[in-house]
Image (cartoon, rainbow over all chains, first blue to last red; front, side):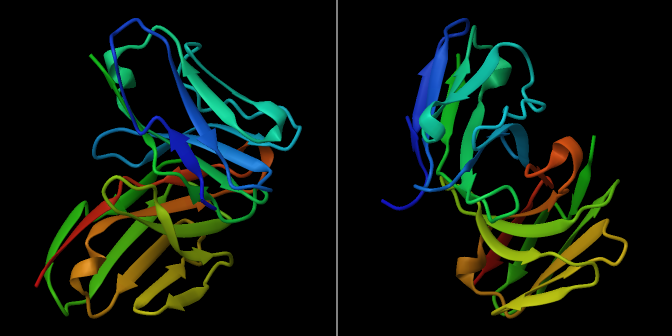
Length: 113
Length: 114
């Protein structure tokens, strides 16, 4: 499809395990964003990538969180040693540039037991 | 950091009624956006506002960018059942290290009774 896709759609893991969440942005979009949405809350910015520039990591809540974007396209958000408070929906968005409309994927619902 | 306060948190209305929700910020934004999120989906952009004082309509939706650049409202007229969902305001400040990222309000849950 032409939209932003994310996988998996749901992930259940045990506390202490590592998880990887994937985002496929819209083709040609240079900017990619990760947000976290906790139950009943708004979206919280985590990190964004713009072209070949260094990513803005200012929203990552701890050093257990990291993300990379390979080849300017697909991005992976990694959470190491997951904690129960990491349970949330992780949303990815992409845009043509940082001043353009952000299109969101359906999200990955992460549950840490 | 920037804080967005969105109100009301939830609304229960009858079909055909008008709805109004608003957001206020502790600091200024260059862009105000309003999104709607359906269950299991990502937010979808409804209206974007780029200039202080701007009033923009999209069908039954009307939104305004406050002249102080610290607030915005969204009105929905003649609500219909498919308006049900969560509405988020978001601000974007194009400057410094904040360029590009969105700051979201807590959301307004809208329920429309037929």
